[in-house]
Every structure is written in C-alpha cells, then in structure tokens.
Amino acid sequence: MRKTVYFIMGVSGTGKTTIGQAWAKILDIPFYDGDDYHPTTNVEKMTSGKPLNDSDRQEWLLALNNLALMQRDGAVIACSALKQKYRETLKMRMEGQVMFIFLQASFKTIKSRLQHRKGHFMPLSLLESQFATLEPPTAPEAITVSVEDDVETVLTQLSQQLKTLD
Ligand SMILES: Nc1ncnc2c1ncn2[C@@H]1O[C@H](COP(=O)(O)OP(=O)(O)O)[C@@H](O)[C@H]1O
Ligand SMILES: O=C(O)[C@H](O)[C@@H](O)[C@H](O)[C@H](O)COP(=O)(O)O
Image 1 (cartoon, rainbow, N blue to C red):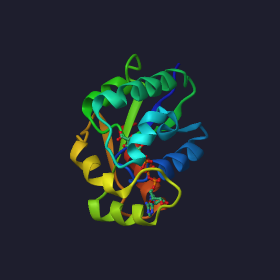
Image 2: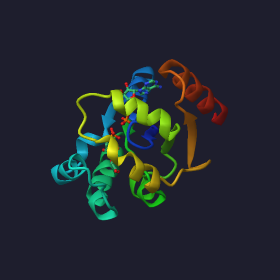
Image 3: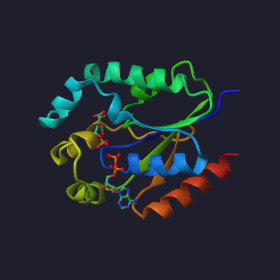
C-alpha cells in the first residue's frame, strides 16, 4: 500500500525546508524541496522581486503532483501551496495518501528569520504578497503547527498532533 506523502506548506521563510528535512530524517523517508522544481523563469521572476501568479505556478504544481505520485514509500515535500486550488492540484490522484502540514507564524517572526537567511533567491520584499495570497488550510485538509518556537519544539508539536490523528 502507498505510504503518506507529507506536503510541508506555508509562506516563504516559514521553515518548510528546515522542518521538512528534519521530519523526513525522523521518518527515514526522502525529502524534496519544491524550490528545486520551479522552472527557471519562475526563479528569475521571484529573484527580480515579482510575485508568481496562478499561471506561473501551474506547471510547477503539476511537477510536484507527479513527484508525489512516484513516492510509493512516502516522502516529505516542501511547497508553499498557498491557495486551496493549488493544494487540489498537488493531491490529484492521491486520495487519502497526502497530508498537508501548515507551518504558521506571524509576519514579524518570519520577516526577522528571512532577514538572517543567506544564499536564497527569494527576496524579503515578496513576503507581503505571500501573506496576501495565502489561503490558510483548516482541518481535516491540513494540520496546523505554530513555528514560533525553536525547531525541536516544532517537531515535538508536529509529532504530537499527528499522533492524535491515529
Ligand atoms: N523554528 C525555527 N526557529 C528559528 N529559526 C528557524 C526556524 N525554522 C526555520 N528557521 C530559519 O528561518 C529561515 C527560513 O527557514 P526555511 O527553512 O528556509 O524556510 P522556507 O523553506 O519555508 O522558506 C532559515 O534561516 C532557517 O534556519
Ligand atoms: O508559490 C510561490 O510563490 C513560491 O513557491 C514561493 O511561495 C516559494 O516560497 C518560493 O519558492 C521561495 O522559496 P522559499 O519558500 O523556500 O522561501
């Protein structure tokens, strides 16, 4: 039977890569960063300070859905998945085998973390548009985990929340 694919979602800088990598390590399953699947044109657009639109994101979301479909042994995929309709695309043909984990923090917290992040193409100036685009998911579509605390605390809370679903 196909195992769960976890989509770690949220705005830029919310900790998708950090938490996603750690969660994949705990579960001993592969981690994929959605950033690596953007067409070059998308990366160029974001680097130049312009937010992506629905049409820019479509090819990327389909690529990530394809990636998810290949993960029969489970995986963790980091992807902003900001809108409900994007999440519908990501989970196509994966009924019951996908779990969205929404990482949530205040604008202030994320801004401060992005100000310290190095070597990433995404400019801080796009954070406002990320929050404006975000359609926060609710249960049962996703579980929501606050990432205001340190990484260890976030992982403990994530694990506890998932246990309550068993
Ligand atoms: N819970 C946390 N506490 C403190 N710093 C964090 C936490 N999660 C992530 N970070 C830091 O915040 C920055 C953004 O995290 P990152 O994983 O790159 O986010 P995303 O992949 O969502 O853009 C990184 O510098 C990372 O080290
Ligand atoms: O849908 C989008 O607008 C982008 O995917 C964006 O949300 C994503 O966050 C970037 O790829 C930046 O990467 P980080 O999220 O790692 O900052």
